Image 1: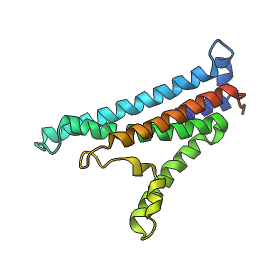
Image 2: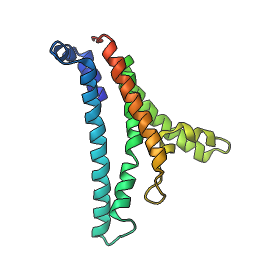
Image 3: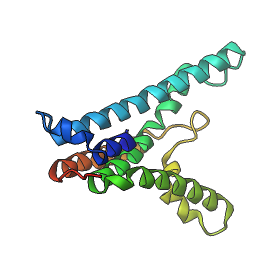
Length: 171
């Protein structure tokens, strides 16, 4: 969504939308709502599909509720990533996709280094993956998920305010 939004702005198509009664903040909030809803839908669909596939093969390791809980565990972290990308889009639209991919790549590298290098465990807290529970094998920490979700929603709200206050970038 953010890459497409940046492309719409940089190609000049967003000017046509903004020439009408649509407010910038409402437009970005709608895009973010679509992306967040899609993340939620994908998480639930993946969890139910995983459970159903295991059930059809006679594997009953975790119940449907635990599997859906594991799928939902991913959503707050996805919202944080969306929020970081949205703030970047609001400030520097051309770099939004790159910053978002760099964040995910950094999280992977930090997580990997923290598990492989002695004395580098502090890097783990700098990874988005650090805040995911290993569900359904481990219990989901709901308070952690709520804090991560609030941070992500705060970033999204900040991006809406920032985008509503800036001029559109062209080409």
